[in-house]
Image (cartoon, rainbow, N blue to C red; front, side, top):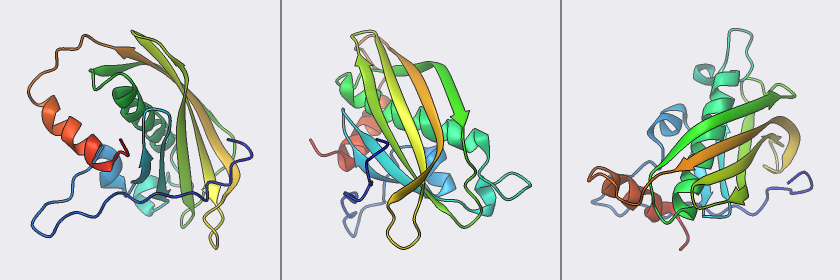
Length: 170
């Protein structure tokens, strides 16, 4: 990922006129995060760094970076597991450089290990060049360990599954 320019961007499909747009992750959606790719081998997206995302000094809040990391890894793990329930059991984030108010950051999550009951994902968050949207400076890197739960899922998960599938290239 360090050499990846991040320039291949696949937008989510447009919602049909009579359809309410779905959010693959409600918390990220509320902050303005946009998924650009969802798959079992990569989840990517972008987030404009707004006042809502910043700590008092005008830089991206570390908690927001942690949310981006765990949420993107969770979406990828959910797909990679065949739409089984997933739960984050460990999150480690290193904050390397600031992203400032007005910047756009790009996130990319990729699996390190895809086991039947445990998955490990690496997530990198980059500050994007304003003119090209290419990844410029590594803002943070995270390692997320996910527990894959039994295949039976509650009824409310069917809505979430439909939401993820709407954005995913299957």
